[in-house]
Length: 278
Length: 245
Ligand SMILES: Nc1ncnc2c1ncn2[C@@H]1O[C@H](COP(=O)(O)OP(=O)(O)OP(=O)(O)O)[C@@H](O)[C@H]1O
Ligand SMILES: [Mg+2]
Image (tube, rainbow over all chains, first blue to last red; front, side, top):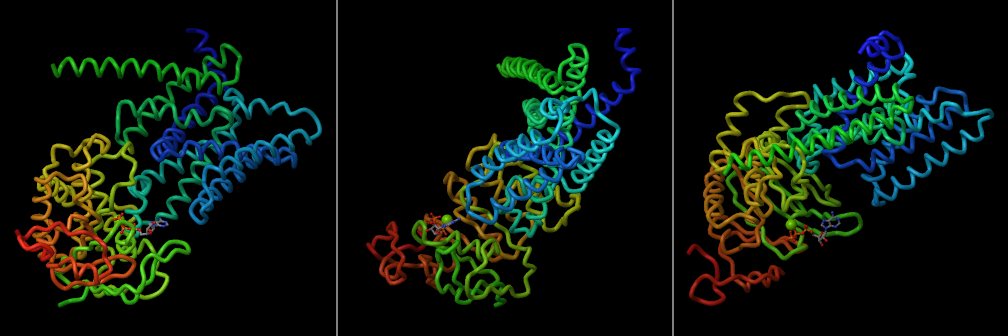
């Protein structure tokens, strides 16, 4: 217990806790949209495409997250545009972009002279080393997503649910689609620092899946996903510190444990309600 | 009578494929038009042109003193995702989307209207259910509520009778008859027997559109309209078909 109080006084640990909570907020909101709209594969594509941006930024000596953000957002807008304006199959485009991003990333990182010490942290996350810049970016992202959803959750949900119908009501379908896919890209890229490229998609889907076991309401799913996100990421954070392993792995591991517990709770609740029915 | 909508020599289709050719149609206040035609004839395409979902390649669509937001729409067989986290009540309220603007909120008036409609359609007990928990027919009723909650001037229904049991079908047409007192209705159906006792006029769509200014139609007329569908004979005289039974 004393140990916990001790580490809580460290600056880096407070930053990590802040990052975990902020990541849970943006991932909780955006992830609910991803799960409801079934765009997990698109999100995976954007994630891996952004690795190309990391590589190029690295090579040019720029901030890798900045490179990833530019690359990620443009890939996202590109995917949306291609699938709406042409009759190319969307999943093939995503597959190509996915691989291209990874390939570019690897090429540029290897071409950069010297060792790439931070590479592992991009792939697997490193919540214990988040900088104040990372925290500012994560806070800005949370404020942005919360405002967008506070103002426009209804139209966003309606367009996601039945785009054709929304169009007959002259809803700004295109604007909302582009806005949302750009937000998805930003949420992915800014959370790479916390859980890493390989695992960020789980942060956007597992808490939502757990919440979805207990509610079918979009708004409540967001609240649930944020809550499970905070619990899981804080658990993962302590584990990462204790075992000295990348935070991405421990956070996702905690999510899976939460998922299993939730499944058991859900099944026993079901059994209980059946008994009551009898 | 007031013209609400006029299509003049409209050509429309998808990509390079023309589906509708030289279509003329006038919709007036209190019209109740039944649209019939073979599968793939272009009925849904016509509705989408009217709704502005497809731009015509040629020809014009004119709305006359109608707020063009005010078209109610019930789509054909739902391509929607039944697992989407949204409740019955929310789906129905989404029919008010265009009245709410981007940042709008619902008033108690809106909620009362939704409740009234659900009561009328016998789905009030389902109001908080997720749409995934409904049967096809129940979902069809939800979509009907969504289509009429905004009290549109034109109501467009693409095969509302699929999935619906015969009991509700009766009720459905009762509801439509009443709605028709203050809105024009365009209804697509393959069940010509039932619609012809409710619609006022019939349009046959098979590439082109032939307008039939009565709700009695026979096999010979269908043939000249280039509309290859079989009428189920209801009267005692074979081939002389379809009027109230
Ligand atoms: N999205 C689309 N892209 C390309 N072609 C389409 C599309 N939708 C329909 N079509 C084609 O347009 C033609 C007319 O289709 P439409 O859906 O209007 O027929 P319909 O009369 O409503 O038929 P049904 O009775 O089966 O509902 C068909 O040949 C169909 O193949
Ligand atoms: Mg059709």
